[in-house]
Image (tube, rainbow, N blue to C red; front, side):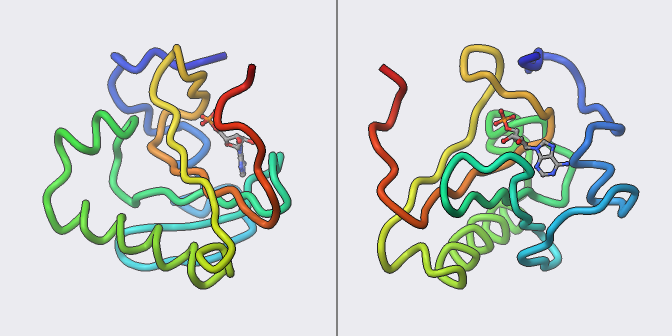
Length: 125
Ligand code: AMP
């Protein structure tokens, strides 16, 4: 069920619980600003999610409210994860679903990194 992006941050969403260590993930990378882990239902040969450690519902929320150090740390982490996992060399797709029209399901900002092979058209036709 896509989220209502106008709602306040839900402290019990699944990625908040992963950040608190309450449920496991297949961790790829962690630093003070970000956590990266494999998507549980991969849509590409390699499908990694990168999330900020701060409580932000979406890219819209993050870009409006996050302080500059958190934004810089998160953006650096996304690039680092892509490079460290061999995605930058052959190319990859970076995507963040925001709200209902995009079908965002988890109400904690996450960037999808897709790669590992040709990815096809950008949007379903
Ligand atoms: P979105 O539709 O952009 O909100 O994407 C949510 C993504 O989170 C989907 O690709 C799910 O497969 C993924 N997901 C949901 N729960 C978990 C989990 N516990 N661990 C890893 N990925 C998850």
